[in-house]
Length: 307
Length: 307
Image 1 (cartoon, each protein chain N blue to C red):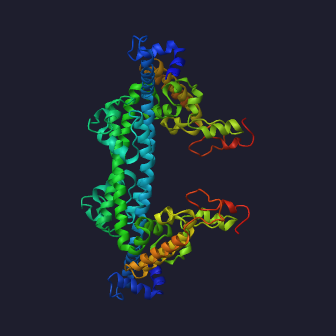
Image 2: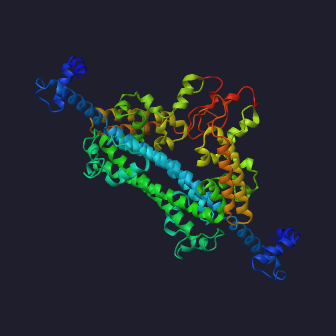
């Protein structure tokens, strides 16, 4: 204690500041007794302030991804399991879970239900009481996971609306949250050049490009926005560049001013329309458009390097 | 229709049998009209009878594994998430989920609770209402997944008690169910030689052994039984052989007679005790017991092949 006290005395200014932050104004008299308290309080307050809006959103995004993965796995299990009893039921995912949790055995499907005919003529085997109960509980669990997923999603939308309104406007709340999550924080996202924002999430393709002959990736996770996803392949690179530029701008506005600025969205729309008008049809020299939806590398260039 | 009718006529006996099974006794008059119905009904009844007690148990075991995996993943997420708000809480898994779902914020922990002191002096950050609500829902979901897991487990125990009472006696209901699941059915498990039962689940080690120089694996998933797991390393191979032999016998008794036979369990206990008495301490020539719990290969033999 005493020794570490001597060490800290050297950084007297920092210590005084920390002590002041913790509410100790007079430090001289009880210096050595207080020192430990002050240090602990300072460390605690640092840890507390570590939890920002960013980290909350990042946690929520990661929880959303976890739930997505788990929900898919469990609903596949339900499909296979319940398929033994009612193979004609053409439901999957959430609708299947809701069906099983509300009816259980196909004998319980009411006449008014659209599945009644299929249920009464099904070639599936009979469902015993114990099986039915278990399947219902399993399906009910799955339903509440779907509900939780929706709840977290709406939380993210709300939280993004206050943390990063511009980013939410431009990229959408979920994609914006995912970008913050992959960058690490809003500050980091704001500090990235827009060319980096454009390829966040395309690490494999990017490093393949940096190592060798493949062309650079056109888009990372921003591909998930309809602007890029629904565009024809020859516009995607251009749209992605414009889109990433405005995302970057929005993130900076959010981080440094915090105010909502509708002009970014308007400028983006103008730019996107200009690109779409300027490139109405596929370029003629590209005779072989590759069919991949992701479009993260052009196979035609594989051997010759980039032209 | 007519043509396929002619084809099927060749297998008249089968068809008559199927028709009889489906309740058509007089077949001659309406032969061609009935043919299609009979074939469809026969196919349907085949599909229905495909769902046996075996497949139900197998589905339940797989659902259990799915839930285990998902519950682990989601509880890790909860640990990380809630750790921001209450890092001093030393709970994990189910107890953490129950804690979060019942209290939410650490401000709600009552004075009588053992965590009260930690909760009131925690260095975690404050929990807003929206965050608290979301975390509570997430934790509640996790709790009900734990409940479902327990429900499925007790279902397996009950179902195994009626399908394979001897196997449940010898190996335990869950391990027995897992063996049936890995073999494919009780019939298949009964047809395996006990040396195969001994290494079910140790495919990697077995094929490594068959390809090259490593020794054969001593046990597959039967290692999960306390008989093997809690034994000292020098007894494990011998115990596993005796255990697998009785599992095999139990599976055959279950499949072919279906009656409970307590003598198998007694014979197993006698045999295990004999092995334990005959091998009280580590053999002297094995100077280097390998520390791995699984013990699926002896490293000392790596170069020289099996002696």
